[in-house]
Length: 181
Image (cartoon, rainbow, N blue to C red; front, side, top):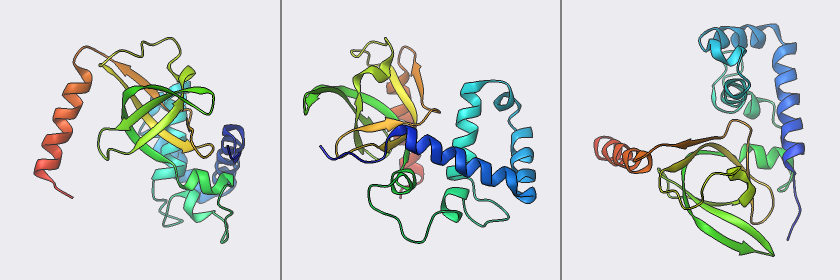
């Protein structure tokens, strides 16, 4: 197994990016304006993590013309660096597909409901939730940690309710029908 960026390295890079945002008065103003539209992000740690990921990784900055992660990325990036892993993150709504052993580790296979892209997560990501549940979805961002395993960013949420997975799949099918790619 090839070792690359760890989640600690990637979280440190997110800290660095957030620091750059707060050091620039124009970016700080954008942060505060966006935060005022999502007031729970200021008081709830789970909402704060999701807000941070959205602002740094998704949201096009008016000042930068791109998300901060893209604007501040170095010109040359090594394939297995934290920068490469963070830039290659992907957001999804993931359905559980099952478990298996990969290089001596139990992993959880998940599939993004929109793209069909699959990922392998450490089994302990479920924190006691049932692996057998058809109604459990994981919503958030994943980064590739090594050649096989993805890790979630802190904004990942587990969603569980009777009929949830089927309802989301039906909604996505309807969205595809009305707006094919």
